[in-house]
Image: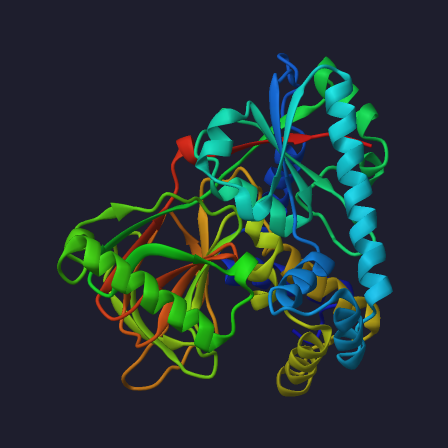
Length: 427
């Protein structure tokens, strides 16, 4: 090993990383590139009715919260100032969002499309049925909410980032089209775009300790106590309707929601370890304790899952330093090598949005003589989790929370019919 050059050692190290991942990073990214350039559309984008679902701005949220308590607009200004927030700044961002939403709506109506503007709190299955296509006007959070209720793979969903300076908008059209939506609409109508069928996951629930009535976290912005109370209220309501404890929910039930990013399972109190059993691809059940687990799609592999699993340059440099000192390896520990190895490792965590595989990640697993974690992460077609938790939730795309306590079993899987029809529109 002493005879290896720096470049040769790096190549050897990257090969080892690929083996550790269980897949070749380059092949993963090759498929991602194919997914980014699907076949051109031949039918165009010609909806008769479009629902434009708009986000709740921070200004609207604060206004609703304080005005509901009987406070005036002047009181709101003073309270925001006490919290170190700028009333004028929030109002400015709100006006920018509102202006961009109006730009989209005007552009659609100008070409004869019937438009229905819906606040995210009013968005429901009836709106989805009415629309031929849905436009998410906000950021990635609004796009995730919109996608969660669209169960048909034939209904197009398009995201428009209405405040590019404050929102990343990975799932939205390029920011150029925020202020040039007529140009985007012309290209869509002429078929000058590509369809991207983003694969989503579905959940079947069974057993006890569950409640299919969900809590919407987006609108309520709940504290832990409020969150638990909301679940208790919904549980009492469902029990009263059923007449017995989860009588109608002990059998397997498919949840009426789809996940575009990830499904997270864990205790509501983040400092409490999550206790559960997990089975991957119908394999043996394994008892685990951890900080929770995430099961993501290819779309979600760029989001929370990526940040759970990525390595920092500091960690990579320290590992390379140990390898150099203990093994006597000829390792060049310059910044370029550390960045190269770090980037190669982290890029391998991202895979194509149309990939029909799930990717599960165990957060901070506890390993001892009682609990194990045979594999901290990996690809799967099916992941089943049996809860042994006291006050746990299963959260879909960071916005929809389901009670998931001792006795509940969730099975997460994918089918082709759950794909989300989105567009790829180049600048």
